[in-house]
Amino acid sequence: MRAAAPGGFLVLPWPGGGGSSELEPGEEGWGGLLRCGAVLGVTLICKSVAMLRKWIAGGVCRCSVRLDGKTVLITGANTGIGKETSRDLASRGARVVMACRDLSRAEQAAEEIRRSTGNGNVVIRHLDLASLYSVRQFTKDFLDSEDRLDILINNAGVMMCPRWLTEDGFETQLAVNHLGHFLLTNLLLPKLKSSTPSRVVIVSSIAHRGGRIDFDDLFFSRRPYSSLDSYRQSKLANVLFCRELGRRLQGSGVSSFCLHPGVIRTELDRHVKGWFPLLGVLLSLPSLLLMKTALQGSQTSVYCAVMPGLEGRSGRYFSDCAEKEAAPEGCDDVVAKRLWEESARLVGLKDTC
Ligand SMILES: NC(=O)c1ccc[n+]([C@@H]2O[C@H](COP(=O)([O-])OP(=O)(O)OC[C@H]3O[C@@H](n4cnc5c(N)ncnc54)[C@H](OP(=O)(O)O)[C@@H]3O)[C@@H](O)[C@H]2O)c1
Image (cartoon, rainbow, N blue to C red; front, side, top):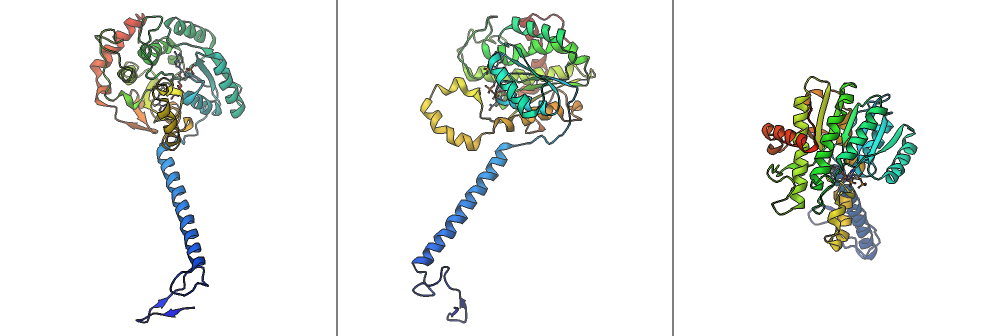
């Protein structure tokens, strides 16, 4: 079945054979070729999608440290990154306290985590970070009832909501994302100090880049409200708080780390979704491809919570399970110190560390 071509070359038969001529593909030959092409095309697409998904997933925490006998407190744990972080830490044997504002959603999540990890030591407590009263009540109960606190994860957050004021008169994003956590952490410090080595993990965002702390108008009382600028300000406050906390706690055995978790499909966009509903529907398919899952998004939080040997990096910023440079505005020690003092004044704390 080999034809000798002019010049002495061998011409191979067309796949599928049986065509009208050995040099030209017949109908069946074309069919075989198309089938081969289709299989090759689908394989290539699947491989590319798998490679893209792996790249989007980013860093993975491969540390297998156990947390038996340790206590972890995590805010905003009923959904999203917080829920997956809780699940991971529960699977390592920790007692996990899930601090949430909606107790029925929290109990649903906790029960799912107890079942999937086999760890019954997962409990829920009420905490509304938009209320200083609630933060104080929560910490009082926690300090009275818990023996130790090894890892505090400040995870809860709200993004780009309308300009709402909390019962304390604070703009909601700065109140929940920063001020509530600032008070919570400071009130829990005695327990963290008596459980050393212990860690504070603060979930910030790459959105701190380009943020600005406007000390003259923190709550957008005078300037026009921008939900994005407010989110950026609050996430920059997370990075600066982590930095100043790390500095103040040097040598105490308590370390602090902040992080960007990636771009993740969670409920965080709940306030943005309503703006362009049709766009939201159109983007839902690409987002499946291009955004991390909540499990993937929890990896850097878990890394900062459990990876041994990070103590010397206290105050630093992480992303994809590795230390990264924070934006220059997140490395300003003068602003960090001023923000600490202003935050302490706003939440009514006289004695801070
Ligand atoms: N998703 C991303 O792409 C992304 C990117 C960068 C940074 N982050 C950060 O990651 C963290 C977790 O976000 P996520 O994506 O997991 O969002 P999420 O699914 O919306 O979860 C946010 C959690 O925070 C809780 N929360 C909101 N306001 C609260 C309050 N006043 N008191 C107590 N808890 C409150 C929510 O409780 P409810 O369910 O009761 O509202 C929920 O449990 C946030 O700090 C966010 O800024 C996320």
